Amino acid sequence: MINQQTLAAHESLEVHEAINFKTLCILKSKMMQGLVFDQDLKALMQKDVEQATQAIADLQVVYAKAAFQAPIPNRPTPILN
Image (cartoon, rainbow, N blue to C red; front, side):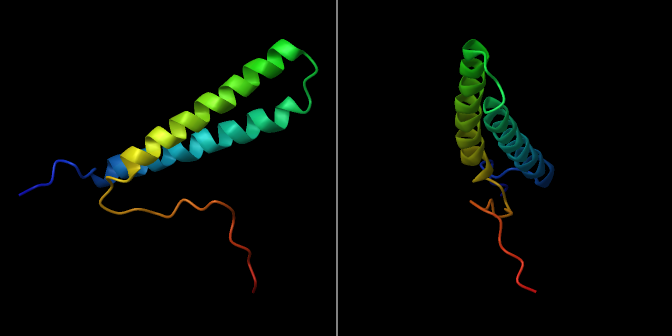
């Protein structure tokens, strides 16, 4: 019997890619906020960060249904060798 709650391999990869993309969007908006002097644009960028953060949370719920998962680290692992 096939479990309907499990994502197919290609769906899992697509959700993972979407999480990575949204993470990069947050990074770019956060970095650009320091270079912007217009308060309206800065507020718009902050709203983008908040929406992307919520999108990541929503995508992680879907990603939990993947048959296999790659870890989504909170920070990069240092290279010691």
